[in-house]
Image 1: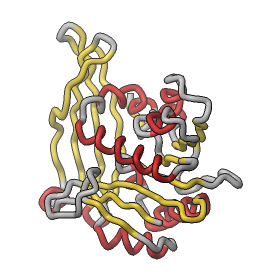
Image 2: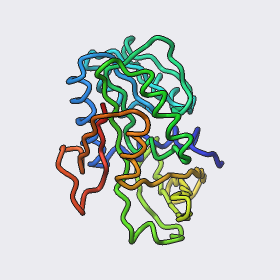
Image 3: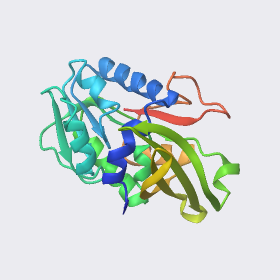
Amino acid sequence: MTDSYGTVMARYYDAAYADMPMLGQDVSFYLQLAREAAGPVLELGCGTGRALLPIARDGIPCTGLDSSPAMLAVLAAKSPPESLRLVSAPMQDFDLGDDRFTLIFAAFRAFQHMYTVEDQLACLACVRRHLAPGGSFAFDVFNPRLDVIARREEPEREELRFEQEGAEIVRYTSVRRDVEHQLTHLRMRYERRRAGNVVANDVVEFDMRHFFRYELEHLLRRAGFEELTLYGNFDRSPLSPDSPAFVYVAR
């Protein structure tokens, strides 16, 4: 089975990312921002609720937006609090009426699914339109390593193993890069094994756009954000050559 990020990712997402240490750090970071914002929160690309559910369960009114109904269905099955509303829409084209939020955020590199400048600016315009006065937009993307993004192709390799529903899942990933358009095409094959035998293969393919620091700052300024804070990681440490991410808070 192959799809472009919907049902296959929804099936494996929580189990695949359950033990990734960096992801616990980002949940704590966005939860703290939500507490500081002291108002309603909107997450773009909320997926299965990994980052949003802890905020909603902290008693903060939340809206989760995602373009994948399958991912939202997984989130809805987790018995979220009544104060959490789910909306299926693309993050570059959504309209929530008169709703305004003191914090809008896009965790786990969701903004990297905005492939063109047109989509990036459209997303930022939607964010600006839905922010309350003085509100903040926070997001993270990976800090591109030049030696890595210069590789045009990486052959399929085993990336991780995890258990799910009594089966062993092995994820194999291959990569192609379009350097001219700053796009990385990923193909992930989830091999399901029972008693050592392969019983199924599910494949998901999608692109991710990488960004450079001042490219992002130009986009944010162009979209009307005036105060930008940049961290190199979710512990709010400053950017350094070894920082794994660009973590922005824009007001």
